Image 1 (cartoon, rainbow, N blue to C red):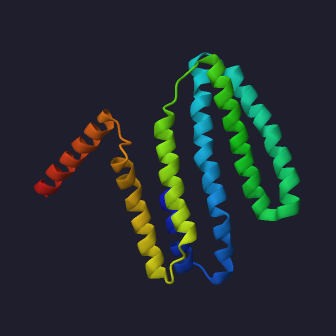
Image 2 (cartoon, helix red, strand yellow):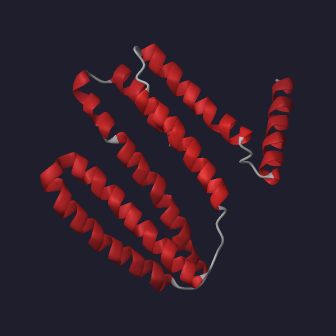
Length: 183
């Protein structure tokens, strides 16, 4: 999501006329919505894993009503921005229901320290993206590349990857090196 966030401005500036630049205000909202949605879907799977498809159906039904209300209230007044915000609110609502109800069905533990690291790194790099306005498209592209590269580097430096994840990364790197040597 960070990659899409930082790549969208230079891509839009290179491919579209200035009349479309206002669409950039929608990007963070839509990305946030689609960052949150899979979270809710992940926890909703716990209903199915526990043989409770009616919980998933009820969650979807309640969310549909919420969604219709949000669209009905926000789109006429705020147009496309209202649609984006209504989508975000709907996905936050659906995820909240899934997280709370699934915990009642199957109590789980979440590694809040790792989630916190993801939030801090993503938020920090996103803040840099929004605060530093590059003077040219070339600088915009450079900033985007720098922020995307910084993401995994900062997570590794902060000790985010588990031992298993480090082993998988090293094994994948070794395979890529072997493939490169063969070609």
